[in-house]
Length: 310
Image (tube, rainbow, N blue to C red; front, side, top):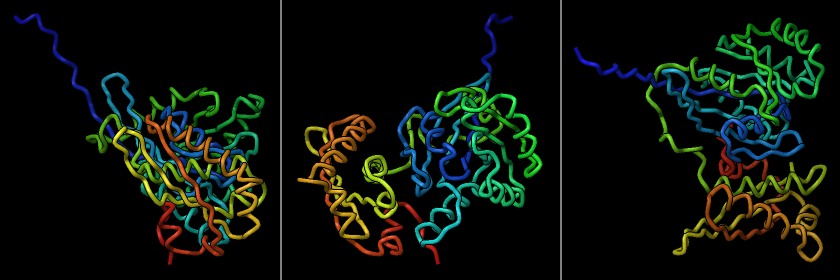
């Protein structure tokens, strides 16, 4: 008889997990925390994310090796502009294409009108939906069970998890459960990939994040950023040119700042974040152009990763 111990067979699983919810529920923070990388931009302002962002995460538990394809979606709200409609459409497409949908709820805000509308639509899709209560570190524990019960009356959730995306509380249990719940499938991406977003788009997004963080009121929502040039240099660095489109001349003046002080600060911080993400030196050059009605142009929407709408 052979003394060799049989090798345990490892099962491969792979699937898409969409993170949906109202603006500012913490979707981008959750994606970044789960993947351990800055893939989706984050700011305290609502509606920061404008398109679907894919985060690729490997997770092993017992005899299962899973590739979890996390999809961060724009916050769902009542759209007004073509840009808004494209953002909301991207969010719902992300959910409809997923194997599992995570409805992320800000525990402090509870069941708002927006949350109720999202829940009603999720109920009609009859897809696998899990409830994830976020920011549970900021609310009394005794309030979580009644909130869970009220939400479960709106949608028949398959599972419920309570987490703090900011602190990382409860995320290991959530990831283990997702790894075991995904369908048997070969991996769809190389195991060392973090996202399918092109570097050009990541560069523009990090610039836009700084606009959200460094400007106020309507300006972040009236701007977009596009990478015009992305050149690999012989020394391993990269030269990047990004154009920021604004709706009004006044917005252009505010973004540039006195003697170019604000645009310089935006560029410095975006360059630092990009160099960390790409793991190489980056030379970032910013240009600000006034372009009224950019948020109604199909070309501008395609450039920032949104599909056309009829």
